[in-house]
Amino acid sequence: MAVISDQGAAVMAEPVRISVKKASAVPMLLLAGVVLYLFYAWTAFDITALLARAQLSKGALLISDAVAYKTHVTKNFRRGDFEVAIEGERHATFKTLPDWVTGDADKFTVDLGEGYVVRVEGKSLAFEVPDYGTIHAELVGKKIVTTLPDGPVPDWLNARDVKLDARPTFSRRVQFTRAKLEIHKFQYGWENFWFPFTSELHGRSFSELLSLSTSGDRLNPDQANWQYILSSFWGNPEWQHGHVAVALFETILMAVLGTVTAAFCGLPLAFVAASNFNPNGTIRFVVRRVFDFVRGIDMLIWSLIFIRAFGLGPLTGSLAIAFTDTGSLGKLFSEALENIDRKQVEGVGATGANRWQRYRFGVIPQILPVFTSQFLYYVESNTRSATVIGALGAGGIGLVLVETMRTSRDWENTFYIISLIIVMVFMMDGASSWLRRKLIAGGESR
Image (tube, rainbow, N blue to C red; front, side, top):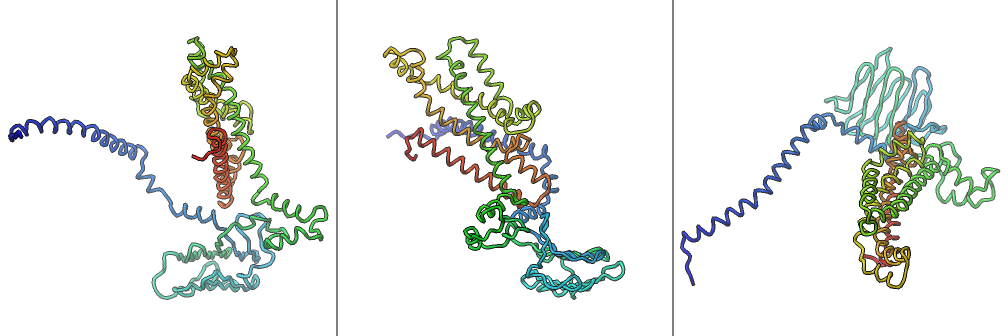
């Protein structure tokens, strides 16, 4: 066995070291580039100031408002009235006090749960807070005189001559000013989701509704009870279930109509753009540039153009989808056509088939899986895009969502619409996958 001297080993190791050094230089340069880019982006977008301005408490408030509702107990010192109402609802003032409020306008008690109790008498209150004590406050002249338990003042309490604001927990709050006294109580759930607050069906259990639906004693002389129950739910003015359902249908219609139109326009144009079907290079160049033009402009831009031209409505959204996807699908179809197996086409031609028969039996079966797969994918994708286009004014569920957010209604309505959009996307994804399996894989799961 030959023995390699130390000098020989050093000579052999030197090329390896240089090779390893060169190989590791590129990843290190890439890593340094990424770090520099992130640093530039952090500086250019002023992320530090953005984080400093962020108000996470407001985010938490919006999230809680999406899954809970707030009830106000209000006593107006100037008018002397007293009411219990749900915030954000136009007709949600309790005619009969809920069981956690007892008394009358002069003297009443509000049980906020878990030991938190507010007792009001005249223009004074006593707020019992577990593990802290009782806060006493009274309006004397134009000042609010507050007496607190011994010890340090907690962060959740702000007592001044003009206002007392106590919020020991997120779901309980008492505000006392010279004009009025407000007690807030958060409760989880979506109030009035099934029926309007003023409806005689409000608050009934499912078994009661089922019994009513089959009862011969009509609640509304003009309708059978089951029709009355459905119409009350469908026309709920606070949640607008009927209006939201129609908007969802418009969104799906917009996506399907736009994609079908794009597929029907893109397929014949793809034959013109494919080099193995159209020998005229000039026409191919023009058609391909048309594909680039219509898909190069984003769908949102097309929708803004069509809104100016045709006004608001689902047709505008369908046109925007059709224009953009004609370019995308036409390009994909033309590439699929250029990659077909010519032997199959020649085989069909050998039987004496004419040109159109060769296309029908030699070409279409080869591109049909690609055509179907891409079409279904674009239908599914355009369902989401139609929601965004709708928000610009094309209608559908996107417009309903924006109107709900713009009017600053309770966030449970916004969360409800967002949940329906997610469910719609899930359903379209499931339907698309099922159809893809049936049409391409012969119903076999992959």
